[in-house]
Amino acid sequence: MSDRPSLFYLAARTFIWILLRLGNRISARGRENVPASGPVILACNHVSYVDPPALGCMLRRPVAYMAKVELFSIPVLGTLIRGLGAFPVDRSRGDIAAIKAAAEILKRGKILGIFPEGTRNTDGTVKAQMGVALLASLTGATVVPAYVSGSKGAARFAKITVTYGPPLRFVLDRKAKRDDLAKWTDDLMDRIYALRENIV
Image 1 (cartoon, rainbow, N blue to C red):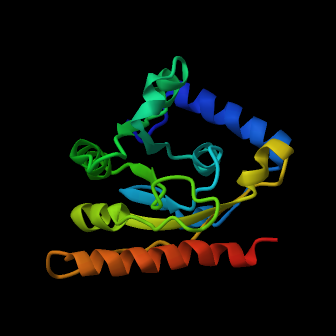
Image 2: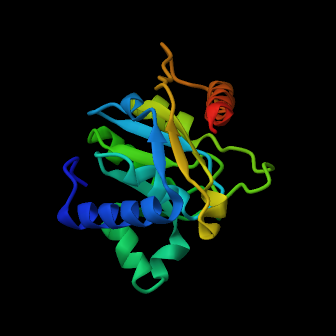
Image 3: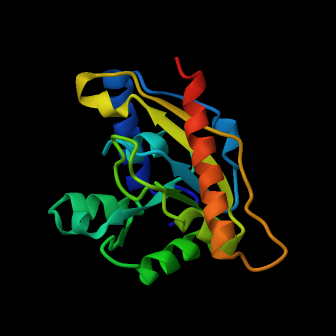
């Protein structure tokens, strides 16, 4: 996916923004924290299916996402999300192909959106996976923590706020070990959830 949005992406993003603006008064804070160029991982909390479009529609740069493989078999939806730059991941196993696809997106200097918990975490019990830390260590991508508030009540027209936090770099002078990835992941999740503290 080019860093210049396709006409399809622009149209879809604009349509989503209008819907969320009218229905949920969506707003964003900290967009200046997202680099204007170069590889970026947007790492965000996840409680609703609205989170991916909310996270991406507030940025000028296009955002690609991992999406569970089952979504791609749904008529119309599968074609739509593929056209928006999504690619499938099989959550039932370690999907090496998805990791390679994600790394390739970052190596081309694009933005990749990832929800570290791997699924919707509506009750706070889902433990984050180490995929973001792994990809950051492999590609040198900047990591921007993000928090979407209000999306759980989107159908009830709750106000949605997207907050992009200060960027992070996961850098070592040696190959990262599992303990490093675990520590980075815990730190990242702390930073993601710290962003909700100033939301009003």
